[in-house]
Image (cartoon, rainbow, N blue to C red; front, side, top):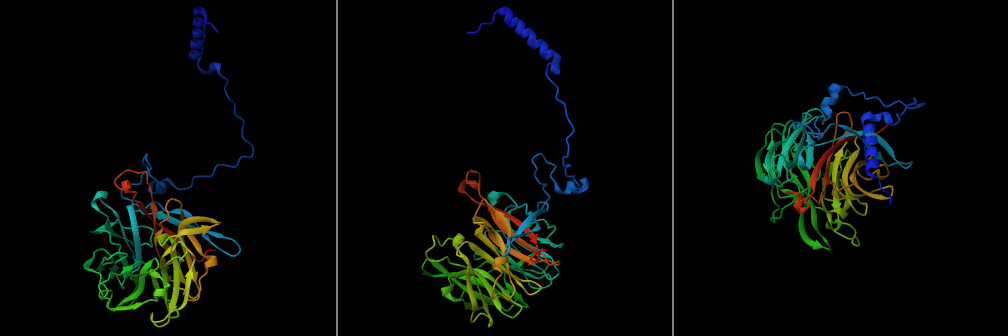
Length: 425
């Protein structure tokens, strides 16, 4: 046992005190030698005035309350290729609306992009609101959200020419509404017509507008076939979306539900629909379903080039015709595959022969998300410069959260935009 006498303890205390009094003189001082061959630090080149408009000045890094979207950031878009994947630098941003979901957009006749979405632009205990926003600069900036309805409907805007728009209900009973001023105001809100037998039809996907004729791909519930109860049909309006008296049922053996429709340059109607998974797959859940495409040269009476794509996990088709005549199909990959790994994201593929075949070996991966599988509702428009603006929903899921929304495991929505090129260098 070591014993310290009172005298020795006093001496030790005095030594320690003197050392502290002298400061760092009793510690060695490091020296520095200039580095040899060091690569210079990259320069910060964004001007301060511009940086002030992009970066938060809050200690919490929160965005200013008057911002509608985050700043634009670079994002990598992958394209498959027989010789190996290729990549392009695209751009992306997210909307700063609490739990924003189910966004869709259209281009008005004057070029304005009009977006309709849902979210909490008010107290989250007071119900979800439906709002519009618009962009007059090709999606670079957006007007503040303007709420015009409270409810769970998921309406989709379509352009009727000039500044005239219509809202078509989504995958709910919903309502029709019309605007004469590019989405600034909405009027004539009426229930969407049911089928003659009283059944409600549902919709999700791009629609076809040709003068006063509007054609959409809808579905309704019917007699169960295996695990499938959906039946797809074309519904058509001849008066700008106000009445819907025409309909054609699609082949029930396809086992399809909602989908998108476009008019190819060769005159064909082209459809892309959500489809049941194979009978021996684990679930009829949304997440297990896949995509069917087909063409019709007689306005939907008969169909050719019917194909089922993938085995599982692809939903929510969006179809547009590019100015050069190609078809662009954008869809949600709830169970996609990259390099042998499952992932969740948004994908796109081109058809060069009016929907007869698709360039699956050159498809694009626009976005990837690890947190939640329910990728949702992509919607694309072609910009004036030939690039594509794609808006889509994905989810933030925090089951450990015990707040107002988290108490029931409610997944919060995030809505983002990716602007990319279908013809990268």
